Amino acid sequence: MAKSGYCSNEQLIKLAQKHYKNQLDVVFTPFMMYMEEYLEYLQEHAMDQDYSMDEIVHMARHNWKKFKKFEKVRYKELAELANSQ
Image (cartoon, rainbow, N blue to C red; front, side):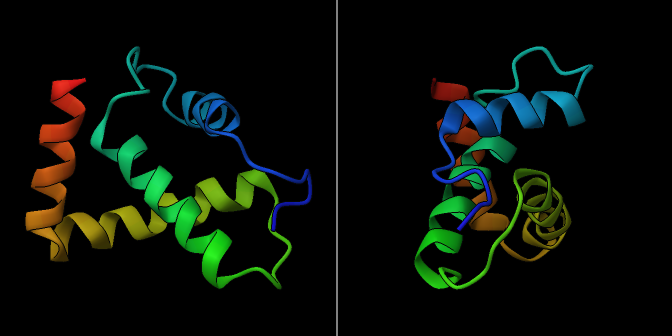
């Protein structure tokens, strides 16, 4: 999967914080909830690929824009989940 082996949520949070330096509470945001789902998807469906952590974050950020536009119901669910944390 990733070149560094298993991708923990802690690693994803650190990478997301690098990309979103002005966002203090990056852990419980709709994007981070989406990142968890996206990582699970990659682990299930892209086992033969060898992505770096930065590539995973970049792909998730790119897909996030489409997700917000076309998956409004799921985005609302993630936002409510993030707000409840």
